[in-house]
Amino acid sequence: MNLPNVISELVKTQNNFDSAAYAQCFAETAVVFDEGKTHTGRKEIEQWIDKSNKDYKATMEPVDYDEKENILSAKTSGSFPGSPIILKYYFQLSNGLIQSLKITD
Image (cartoon, rainbow, N blue to C red; front, side, top):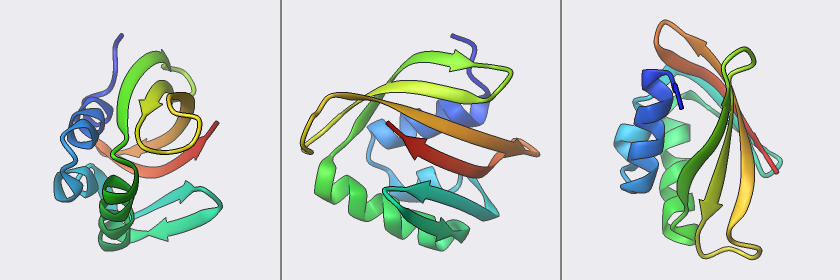
């Protein structure tokens, strides 16, 4: 699978539960939409993923990537109801960083 570098890095940092490195994959003004909530800016994204890591211990295993649309499908496993589940990660990239990310099932 031919993932952009920043998405490969995001998967790696998620699977290592490294919230600080995860947040560095995003632009300073990035936005994340997940579970009905919006997280804006690197600091807020780092706080969101840190809490998520502690609550769910979720890991990602990429299963498909749509290069035209920048949509990653990943088998996501953790300590949450329904695990594992295939989630879709909709990315907007800019200058090698993630500008926005929307996560859906």
